[in-house]
Image (cartoon, rainbow, N blue to C red; front, top):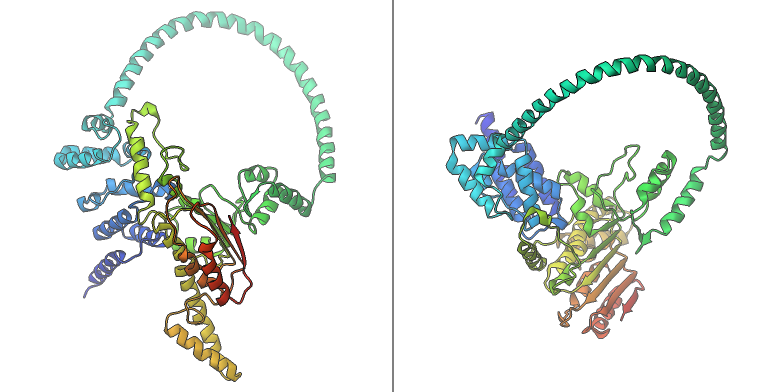
Length: 541
């Protein structure tokens, strides 16, 4: 078997493995990095594109990296393989569809792509544009005559010809005028030069005097700056007082952080040191590094689920794992309110400007698809494990479908199970090394061995024994019809996995008309009987 055949077999194995990769954020990043590394191989491109399509089914712009998504769609559009293009998938958004057309015609690959197909394979070109028209929100988009004018620069050439004619006429007129003006200007210049020379001499003398005065002022100002130089600890107190006014639900909003950072290098340095040990709400693309002028050098303590759209698709698996490794506080507000409302939606969807000629009916269609998507599998992004998580808050929980319930189970059970299994395996090895210490240790080791063989956590019940969340908060809601009717038993299932760490549980049903404290009595009794902690239960009516 030749070396080339070995490589082909490896590529085939990689291509087949893509199908088995879970549809999670980490899985998507893995597939995109495989695509980047092996995109010269058609089978890799086909499988990566199929995965990309399946992953984004029922996804919306407010939860994805728009720039990363657009770049991959452009790669699919311009791909030479019809099997790759067949997998193209455009997300349900009139705004994105409109922007995608603009991206395509302005892409540096467009002209060569269009010319090649127009001159060599008209059938394929017409088929491609017909498929894209079905994904368009404007009848003018993907029109072959319009694209022909763009690709062959006919629009620009016509404009240039008109401009050239106008310029030639203007130049002839200007030349005549300039000849007359030049004669007059020469006479005036001779007179003005004499006067200017005299004025310049006077100005130079004045400037020298002013410079001397300014130098003495600068020195005195520098002395004053040294006198009033503030130590880091004082600036730190000033910043902390300011941040306290900008704090919300236990974490800091970042609305005015840039203003603080721009005061001086010293303010930037102190602010960065404080923020790297605080819970902060972030609203921009998430990049952190150790560069001198980067405000945030470490991953976040607090993560608002809305931030998921700010995670670049260009990230690596290691970057994402690091990003979530320090998260201690997690917050999510559901979109379920929008399910049964006809106006005043909590989430405003983007739409092209009315001047673009897009039918307003598409706007209403976007909301219909969005409402259906909220209840559909795959609407929410499956996040990497948050191994340091201590607090979880979910706001406006309706429970129309199992989407958000499954999402919580993924965070609080599946991901914790993975982490704690790894921890228990490490602890097990340490215990085996100390078997001769005493009989109690031997008994504990045997118990741990049995538990690990059963693929359980800690005590064999599936609970987190090495760690878990300390605080859990959920607010329930009903819609205007008094729906849905709740089965809150899943709360007990979630909390059972964190018996050894739970300290505070908040159950808020002030906006749920058909829930009472009786719904929670059984859960509270069950958890209290199993937990060694004295849990503080807060029931908000």
